[in-house]
Image (tube, rainbow, N blue to C red; front, side, top):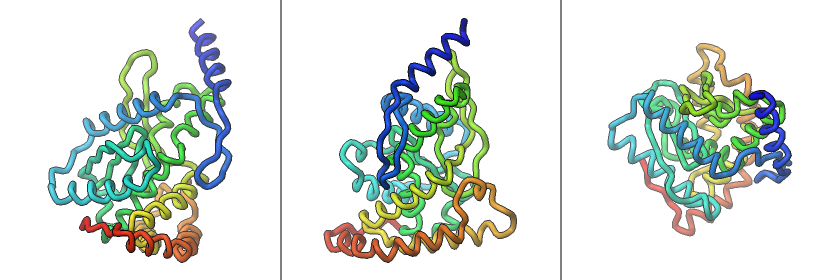
Length: 267
């Protein structure tokens, strides 16, 4: 009986899904869960991560990250701008993430590859790009469509910018969401988050060319061993080529932002 009810629940959710268009014009199938549910799951995942991970008490680091996040989120569409929560985790891996519900997490290890505020903005804009592109909703909808019900909540947990992630687990039927790290996104989603994030950083007054430098630093930091995230992220050299090509087209956007007074001074 439980399996029948679960199957009916999934079937009903899938039937309610909608086809929409992503910020880059890509067709998406979303809507397996409501935005309110998605936000709630993001909040739960973030709260659980804060319980499991050590949070930095370095006032300068926290202020730096909050400043970059604030300057970027001000450029989001209405309804996405307010109440973003930020946490800096004491972890040497160069990772960052963003979740529905307005949550951003950054590992202290990211500062080893993001050498200035523009490069940190490239990381954070990319991660926020996943959220505003509805990638979490898309992944949940896809999993529900294949009836992978036990992985639904785990699929919420986005994509880290740098090195890959371990699994996230959930228990249905009343247990709290449990998560250790974040799952990587698909290559399509990673490429799309690059496009959305690089434009977003330029609109916020950050030099879009620094996204290229950031990725060069990421590759150098990973040279000692094959990075786990390469299995789901686009080929690094191809990614750098695409970021570099887009940067030129985004310079007018960047210059216009600076002329309008969007000149972040975060660190």
